[in-house]
Structures are given as structure tokens and as C-alpha cells.
Image 1 (cartoon, rainbow, N blue to C red):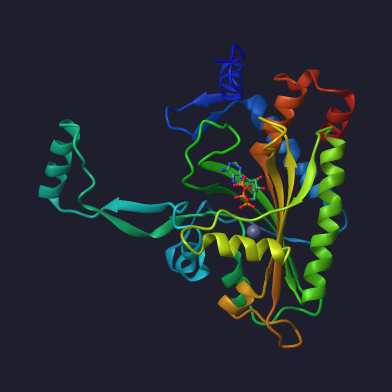
Image 2: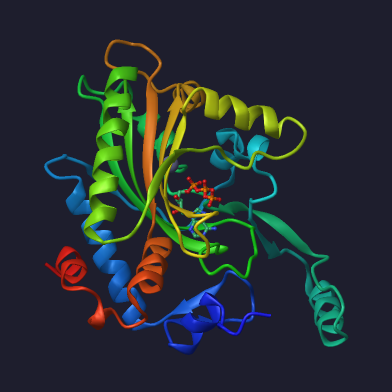
Length: 302
Ligand code: ATP
Ligand code: ZN
């Protein structure tokens, strides 16, 4: 066994993370949150003169929207649904008895109309669709949300609840691909300013089930997803801190989003994992942000 405490242990011992007893579910200290705020602001600054529409949704989304989005086809294993007690008085007594006996008390829990948001951009598409065709210039949105993914892990960079800040572009194929190319540059410049080692790679998602490998291969072959990876645990398996996704016309078709010319809209999103970048910084530059290199502090605090 290694003598060095794990990164998770060190984050908890330094008071940056607060253990809740559930893997991937942590409280955060003020010092950690200050860094999150600075990263968030730096991400928005990286957008330069872009005129974005800022939209915020709660971390739960409309179940019908979630069902229509196609998420369950690809990632049923990651989804989190919200259930609530829907019983009568006798069911309540039953629940309390089961609870007291340490038994399963969830018999009268029923699905609500809410599921936990898996990625910040998911609630946006039907909202844009409902407005009618896009303007000539397309659409550009700034979203930030806590997200849930059922991937419990001891890796502090793989959480069940974490924040994602996304920029989402809607328009014709050229507009959307130009946006993604521009953010590939911006993302690298941002991570360079934070003095983090990184690599850029073609990526694929962990699609579920038998067809999953094929879907992942298709995603790679069509270059739909790039990731900016930073070594946190290992050089060999660096961690995705940014992703740059081109959805082609998937959401356009799903939600009937049209361009000004009446074509099916294409979409792309760039997402930054705020906790991941913060953890990468604490891992690389030390557990006290006041002692970080001058250049890094300047990039974040100005
Ligand atoms: P990975 O390949 O590591 O599972 P991903 O491809 O699933 O990540 P995306 O779905 O593209 O990630 O999500 C956008 C960003 O959200 C990622 O680049 C990452 O920074 C962050 N992120 C994703 N999953 C997690 C997680 N479990 N904990 C913390 N941050 C995450
Ligand atoms: Zn997205």
C-alpha cells in the first residue's frame, strides 16, 4: 500500500471537502468555493465579446423533457430520478416501522415529475424550440447547473453531484462548428493560464449496453467529442476537465428546432467541470490557494 494519502483524503484533511459518508457527494469549504467562483468567472471571461443569453435552471428537470431527450437510450446507468412518498396514513405507519427496523421503507415512493439534471444543457433545447425559428445569427446560451450522475467513486474528480458551466450554440452546421473550433482554442488558453499540464483528445462517451461500443466508435469516427484532459491521478489516465461536443442535428430533430432558413438546427456545447478544474489546481499547485504561483493567481483573481 502506498504511504501517500489519497487525493480525496488530502482534500478532506485540508478542510476543502467535507465527507458526507456517500461516495461522490461532498460538502465544500469557503476556500474551495472561492476557487470555484474564480474558475467560473474565468470561463465566462474566456467567452470574450460573445453575446450570450444567460439562463439558469434548477438541478432537477422536467421528466417528460428528460424522457424525450434520448438520455435513457445512451446512459440509463447514470440517470437519477426523484421519488416521493405518495401513501396514506397507514402507509406512513408502515414506512416508519420499516425504517425503525432497518428495512426497506421505499415501498410507497413513487416517481415524481422531476429527474436530476445530467448535463447543464439538457433543459434548454425545448425552451429554445418553443420560441420558434432561430435568428439569422443562431443562438448562444450560457448555462450553469449542478448535475447528477450515478457513478459513485473514490476519485474526488468523479462525483455524483457536481457543477457544469456550459456555453451552447445553436445554428447551421457552419456556425456551430466554428463555435466549437473557437472554444477548443479558448479552452486551451484558459488551462494554459492556470499552469496546468493538459492534452487534447478525441473522446467518446460511456454508452450503455451491447450497442454502446458501436455508438462510442461512431462518436469518435465522426469527431463529435473532444476533451481537454489534465493529469490528476495519473499521467496515463488524465481527467476530462472540458468537453467540446457537436450533437449534429440530434437535438434539432428531437425538439424541432429550426434555423432562420427553415433547416433543422445543429447544436454544440462546451462544458467545463468546475470541481474538476478546482481539484486539478489544488492537486497541481498545492492545497492552499494563497500559495499558488503568481501567474495562476493573476489568471483567477486578476
Ligand atoms: P468522463 O469521460 O470523465 O466520464 P464525461 O465525458 O462524462 O467525463 P461530459 O459528459 O462531457 O463528461 O461532461 C462535461 C464536463 O463535466 C466534463 O468535461 C467534466 O469536466 C465534468 N464532469 C463529468 N462527469 C463528472 C463527474 N462525475 N464529476 C465531476 N465532474 C464531471
Ligand atoms: Zn451540453
